Image (cartoon, rainbow, N blue to C red; front, side):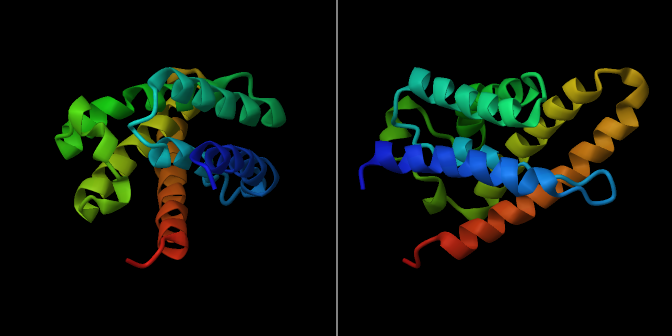
Length: 167
């Protein structure tokens, strides 16, 4: 299967999974997983940046369209997609010359964990900050960010463990 077709299927699958399954999970009013951000983690660095940013924006816009959330998903995923290269440089010490050879699953777990956790918390903080848009609700923003990030990370690492090929 070509990479374009694979990422096209992943794009559609993540929208459908988020909209029809994960958006219907509300536990204790704070926990709602946002697994669609996996797209940012698995998209290869060697691909051109502008199409990747456009695809990330369209993914967020698709989630916003079905969730009636006014663009907050598009903004938050576009932000982490844009900052992804910065965090690759910080956590993995990779530079543009290394991007064609970079595969997230081949990196040490500690670095991968820090990278995924940082981008997930950043995404969720931006998402919930714009959803509440008030400093009076900062505790609500922080609780939503913390609990939803933890649940998203658990689902992410479980899905990577279940669906990864044994090498």
